[in-house]
Length: 301
Image 1: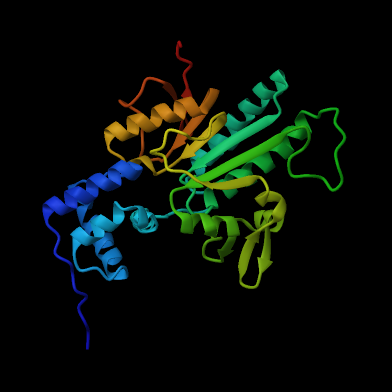
Image 2: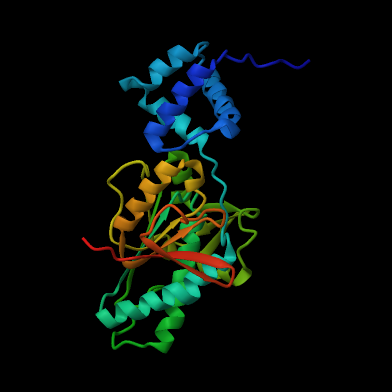
């Protein structure tokens, strides 16, 4: 015998109130096409909190005691769809063209630090993928551009004097905890080749864990892209399939923030369904081999 879950009545005005609160907190915009998703997630949280009125729940969300529930609601509104080596043409452009040019430019300046930010990292597959690609590219680059520095033993993933920092951030605490753990199922490892598994993963039972040397390159942290204080000094920013949650005004504000967070001549990678066209004049689009990246244009102060 099936039981029907009781739905708490929700008026259009109450839904608008919730839409406004979510927008103010994190910039996510739920238009008419996605209103049903917002309603569904709201009903889930009402059941968890055992509340039978939207008004009581809204009062909780906006109270000092309701910060934890507000975080839980926002986590329920994010779709943590990710995978290793996702959007391969763009990753090839990153590794074979953008990274190569960046390393050459930095070496000429004797700047040995590379900083990459994965904004909206979900459960960690993207930043770990970037770390693997950087390590492979650095090894190949070092062979062609040897430097007069003694190589430690055992040989490190990043040859000296280079230093690599990959910052990975998300608004979802649960996803960040999974990312920090770095433990993945066989299904999640589907796109990872055998040789890559040997080099960067350890087998633990029926799962795979990121090796400590690679994990040490990635630092995970909570960041809300709505905030003004975001990580600065990045050579590259990956923010893929995040802006689709924002309206045009919030997209423009976020792009301006990314411009400020990038080093001169830095690069911004967005999702294949996203574009900066019509949103900014502060980036130059580079399109090669079915992949796109945007390079920061230096503007007059």
